[in-house]
Length: 412
Image 1 (cartoon, rainbow, N blue to C red):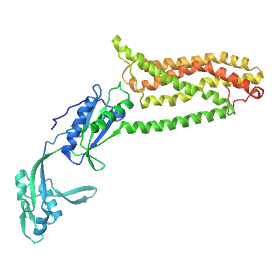
Image 2 (image 1 turned 180 degrees about the vertical axis):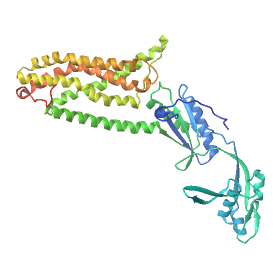
Image 3 (image 1 turned 90 degrees about the vertical axis):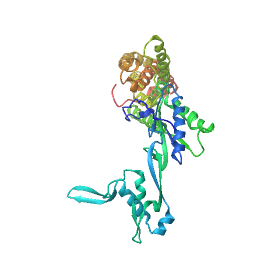
Image 4 (image 1 turned 90 degrees about the horizontal axis):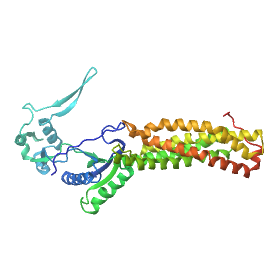
């Protein structure tokens, strides 16, 4: 059997010291403990070689059958012949060992538990348990050895159950350089499916993945729904501001552009950040984790600000000089390029230390900062090029918009 296992883990600020949001749990269940612990130890060794120096922790942590144990196996037919009640048999052994619970006694506001112990004290030697006296229904006294067999064996200190099954959970925390989704796919293919395919685990052993995998899928589904709701709310607010259903659609084109810019920016950050290690500097590797996904929600309210300035100024110019679409758009870009650039520069330089200067705690929100920084930077460039062109085309295509341009409800 495997020996004792020692390990060190890096704690999460969210979930204690169990791997946090990057912990991949492999639940291994079997009908008996020897089979369970053998399969669990083989999976533990497999997980240690799956990644480059991962954190792997079994729960329970001791995968050995080294705890001395006494098994009392009653002979129910013999006990029935002698008139020994099964409940009395177990209660008597309980009283001779750790004490049998009798009842609760309340003294004012204090609750006192009452236990029954043997007057001779607890059993100290395993051989003495054979001489425990049992009183039968017929009023005679027989030793425990007359109705039960006592066996000395070994067991584990802790038996963990999941859904009623004996279970060992391997908590696997991959290195920070490996994306969580990639790590889950590797664990599923190499451990859960691979060990069963090559016959490393018996058919009666059940293996499944939980932990970060379930949380990631749940959170990803929730973020997808929240993203759609946020886009809908932003669009409806723009419709209320411009009193028009069409022009907000031009502003909303900045959202997919900003999202694509954030994804490309994160890829560039990892591509160039990994080269820093060759220069003797700390490498920057930022996986696409759940907190990074939150950056897309932040982008929704950030990237639409600049197109709002262009469209609003154009509408105001058309009200003062109807029919001059190109001049109205060009004047809007000239007058709004300064505030657009100022807001973009201040935001980018404010996020730059979080994204480009590694330090204590920066790895937590670096992905979110990178998505917002690069998404805003890319969308700003598009705002000054694509949005004016699209706005001119729309206004030329719909002459009525030049004659009766909608007036926003608020001033810029």
